[in-house]
Amino acid sequence: MSTNTTQLQQPRRVERLIAGMPTSDGAGVKLTRVLTQDLQRRLDPFLMLDAFGSDKPDDYIAGFPDHPHRGFETVTYMIAGRMLHRDSAGNEGLLENGGVQWMTAGRGVIHSEIPQQEHGVMEGFQLWLNLPGRDKMNPPWYRDFKNADLPQFTT
Image 1: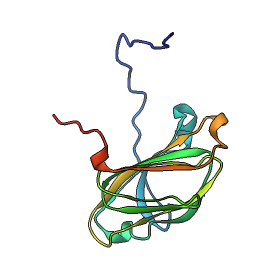
Image 2: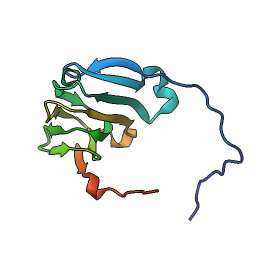
Image 3: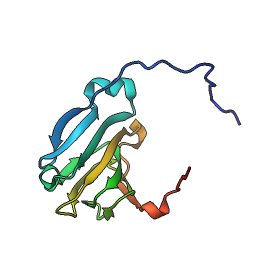
């Protein structure tokens, strides 16, 4: 068995610092877009990184009603709050504090992410990952990971 690893002899230099850009998506959810289109070729398979966080319900309450995805995956980590996922493949899950949601859009899925709270902090981030060409037409897939089911690291 051959491993293809490279050992770093010295630390890499920071190429550049990226400041996230305030924007909104879905039905007006306020968020910060960290990875944008100008970085996609450089950072493939990482397509986009959105961070969201607010204790003002008007910033998040409308959520992300039905919308399509195809050819990539999303990994969402919820720091605080509750978000309900439903999709056209019949999947449903409640993402809660410390939980992770993994969705593979594959050949296509329509889904929604709707807050399940009317007040309090909603905070987390979502990473979009490009699928290799051979996997872009795979069937959609979805999985919730509850906080209690994830490995914990304590210092």
